[in-house]
Length: 100
Image 1 (tube, one colour):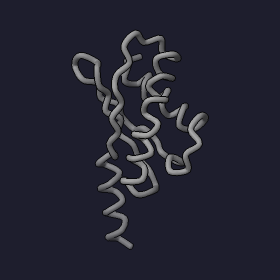
Image 2 (cartoon, one colour):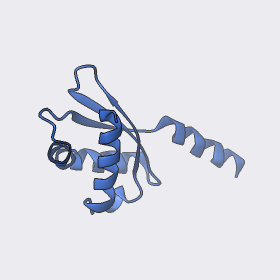
Image 3 (spheres, one colour):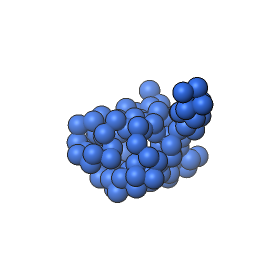
């Protein structure tokens, strides 16, 4: 299994079971992209709440998630985590609003 997939699965597990911030309830990581040198990971997410609130909450817990990833995946160098809203779900939400 590729490292991106392992990171996605582990972060989703941590968000469900370890993080108690209500702004992150229902957040799902849909895709992970690693830089070529593995120093940074961009995590694309979906959420029911406003992007600004969720993005701020993600940045707040990024250090904890990074530490947990290092331990659970046995990584010597754990990438910096940067969160972005999944653009596909944003387009879907806009389309649904137009229909309603």
